[in-house]
Structures are given as structure tokens and as C-alpha cells.
Amino acid sequence: MSAPADVGSRDGSRVKIHLDKLAKRYPGQHKPAVDELSLSIPEGEIVIFVGPSGCGKTTVMKMINRLIEPTSGQILIDDEDITRADPDQLRRRIGYVIQQIGLFPHMTIAENIATVPKLLGWDRERIAARVDELIGIVGMDPALHRKRYPKELSGGQRQRIGVARAMSADPDIMLMDEPFGAIDPITRDRLQNEFLRIQAEVKKTIVFVTHDIDEAIKMGDRIAILREHSRIAQYDTPERILVDPADEFVADFIGHGASLKRLSLSRVRDIELGSWPTVTDDTDRAEAIAALHASDKGSLLVLDRQRRPRTWVDSDHLRRSDARPLSEIGLPLAVVEPRATLSDTLNEMLTARYSTAVVVGESGEYQGVVDIDTINEAIRGMRSAERGRLRRGFDVVDEVG
Amino acid sequence: MNFLNYLVSRWDNLLELAIQHAIITAVAVLIATVIGVGLGVATYRTERPRELVIAIASVFLTIPSLALFGLFIPVFGLGATPVVVALVMYALLPIVANTIVGLRGVDPAIVESAQGMGMGRTLRLIRIELPLAWPVILTGMRVSTLITLGIAAIGAYIRGPGLGNDIFRGLARIGSPVALNLVLGGILGVVVLAVLFDLLYVLINRLTTTRGIR
Image (tube, rainbow over all chains, first blue to last red; front, top):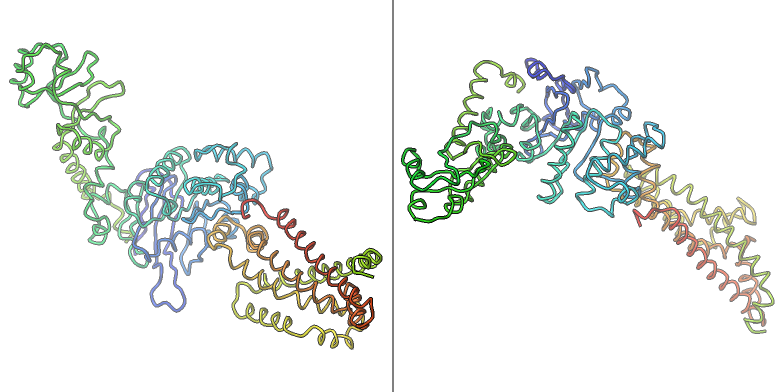
């Protein structure tokens, strides 16, 4: 096996955790649970371990905080081999969240969050301040929830407290084992978004295990797709995994909706907007009809005086002699903002009567249009850009497997 | 003399016997708790020792008490000591069994998260596992106390303290007018003590468990 992926050198971020030929064999089992896995996890990123059940992804994660002792190999955190460190000291500086949450039922929310700071010997005021800060960070009210017990919270709130508890001593690293797995889909979506918002501020190095590829794509800066015995099938950004799956296994694992999934990765602001013939609200009919004939489109986009898009008008609308301003006739618009994902945009288009979405800026002013062809073009563009990058030899990922 | 008059005239004697009875019961249950929880903690993780401890404590409980007291005379002599030793043996099973059940009943996810946060084995046991198993252990102590209260009365057979003295005195004078009152007084004393101990356990449970696990 050649040197593992050195992600650090590619985009300037430092390697936080480095797994070197990490292996786990259980006595009496012929094949190893984890077979010489080598992987670098860059600082401040969310790295997702995803794979079918039984592939050993949880085993790999639990070796990082040594809940499972590796049979051989090394784990380097900040270039220090932690396979010989005191496991309890190690765990106090690594946040840990599991699917069942595991809050201590006999302790209040505040006591639960204070667990690690107490172990580290923080003084009482510092702990109290930190507890309140964290309850706030995860979107709950300290005054209301501090003294509550876990059984008095909803599932979603418990999960939030689980995350807060893992962050209590401000660890650089967090390990999360299907943290949103046991929560209803709507709450899960909200918790995922909240977590990404928190992560954008705190920039922890996060190892996140899931079996759900959609969650992996949504949450991951980088995804390691693992096959049996924790062999890496592909370790890359979500974009590149979707655009260029390394092999059949990865393609199968992503499933048939790869193109659709890719749409939720890029946003309107990332693609080149189309233009459309426009008229202003107060243009008279003859002038508008002339403009329509001069263009190659079947309709015009009506803007008001602040250049805000109002309606689509076609020749039928214009021929009906009518004194109303143009903004009051015609078809309603599908309007999106630059930060909308292409997936949302497509959804808007399909819902509206006219299969073109109008892009508006902050104050609602017209910026351009997106149509089906633009989206198609964008997907093709992503694919060829990735291919180009691969050909130019930037790829370091293949070496890992 | 009817029973009510008897109680009124002899209440100071009954109270003294009841206090002795309560003390010997409390001492026996406390010693049994220390030994029982210790054995439970030592064995709950491993199957064979766990089964062995339960089996031995079960055998203790099945030995007829009168026979056991008799057997202890040559070893410990007469008085409170052999009674306490025997009572500890009888009180052991409910406490050991409930300690093991309680500790094994703690959700493994809770233990794992404690371990993942850097709590060592001892800390985990003291701060997480024992507090969560405590209500179950307390129930074991409550059952042990009831068993002990009854058996302690028989301790008077080898001159142990407590309400058994009145009962045995009464039984020895069957036929005389005071006999029935002596026996009934002793029985009533044990029943009242049982109720009082039960109330005490409710109070202890309130004071030592948080709202989170009630």
C-alpha cells in the first residue's frame, strides 16, 4: 500500500487525525473487522464514514477514542501517537455522541453537560457559565432547561443536549455515531441544519458515522465510503463522489438518484444565469409586441420600476386589448434567490406554470433566469470539470484504497 | 386483664424490646448491604461467579432458622452476636440479587457514553451505575428488612434481644392468663416495626434518588 491520502497538502488545511494501517482482528474470526485502514482527516472538517451495516465503520470510529483497542497500526492526533496514551485522558479531549444519546437519567441537563468539565477540574463558576452557553448554542433556553431531567425533554431536545455535552470541554475533535439516526425525519433535518450552523462557527474536526448516503452528502466536507472490512472504496468530497464514483460499489451505494443528489450540492449563484428579454411595466402594447417579435423567445419578462420581476407575458396576453399595466396580466413567476440549491430551483420550476425560474437579488431585483437547459448544462459542467481535474493528476484519493 | 389493658400497663417493656428488635434488624441489614452490594459489584460482570454467589445466598435463606441458631451456639455462644450473624446470612439474598439485577439493568448506551467521556471504571460505577441501580438495591434492602424482622424474633431462642423474648415467654406459659397477651404483644410489635421500616424506606428513596429516575 502506498502513502495515504495527504489531504493537507492539497488545500492547505492541516491533518488533525491520521490513521496509519489501522487494523482490528477479533479472536476466532478469520477475517479482520478492519483491515489496514489508512486515512487522513483534515482539521476543522466533517469527515463522514459511510457504508453498509457491518462494514466496520463504527469500529474504526471507536478506535479513535479507544473504546475499541486496535490490534495493530497507529492513530496520530496532532502527530502524536495516541494508541499508548491514557485512554481516559484521551477521551476527555474528544467529544463523543452516540445514536442512543446516553444522557445520564439521574442527572439534570446542567449536570450532564458539566460531566467532562468536572472531570477536568474546572471551577464552579466556569462550569456554570459554560453549561448555560452550551444550552444556548444548541438553541435551548438555559433558564428553562438547566434543571430539567433528560426524561422531561423531547427526543430532539435530548439529542441537542447530547451534542452540547460532547462539546462541553471545547474538544478539538468530535466523534458522532449516527447522532441523528433515531429521530423523526423532520426534526432530523432541522437538527442537521442547526449542527451545520454550529459547526460553521466552531470548526471542530468531526468524524461522523452514518449508513445514510443522503445524510453523508448533506453533512460531509469529505466522505469515506467503506466496504466490508473497512476498506476504503472512495474518500473524497461529496461533489466528486457524486460526479465520479470510483467503482461499481460506490455507484451502487450512491444509488440511482446521483444526478438529483448532485443538484442539492450546487447553488444558483454557482452557475451562469441565462438572460431573457424584458419589458417594463409601463411599456405600451405595440412596443411590447415588437420586442417579443424581435426576440427568439415566446414570451417577455415584465419588470416593475424597481426592476423586480412581476409576470410572464406572451403574444396572446398582449393582443387582448386591455388597459391594465403589463404586471397585472400574464403568468405568475417562479422566483429563487442566488443561495437556493439547484434542487430547490428545479422544484420551483416544476411547480410553476412556466418552466423557467427567475433569479432575484437581495432587494428582489432581476438578475437572470435559470431554465432546465441551464441546470442540465451545470451538471454536465460539474462532471467534466471533475474529470478534467482527475486527468490533471490532482487526484490523490485512488492511492488510499 | 384484656389485651388493651396489658398494652397500657406494659408499654415501656414492649417499647424497650421493640427498640432492641429494630436495632438488631438495622445492624444486620446494614452489614448485609455492605457485603451484598460488594459481592454484587464484584460479580455482576461475570457469569460464573455471579451464579455462584446467588446460589450460596439462596442456600442460606433456605436453612431453617431455629436449626441455624442452634448450630451457632457452640461457635458464637449465646446473645446478640450469633443472632446478627444468622440474620446477615438471611438478609443477603435479596440484596445481592437486586444489586446484580440493578447493575445489569443499566442501559449499556449510558455506560458507553460515560466511558466515552473519559470516566474510568471506578468513577463510572460510583457516579453512574450504582446511582442508577440504587432504587432496585433499596427494594432488595426493604425485602431483607421484612425477612429479618420476622427471623429476629426467633433469635430470642438463643437469648438474642428483641420482641421474640415476649413471644417465647408467652409460648412457655401456654394456658396461663398472661400467655396470649405476651405472644400477641410481641407479634404486634413486629408488625408495627415492619410498617415503620417501610415508611423509612419510602423516605430514604425520596431523599436518595433524583426526580430523573423516579
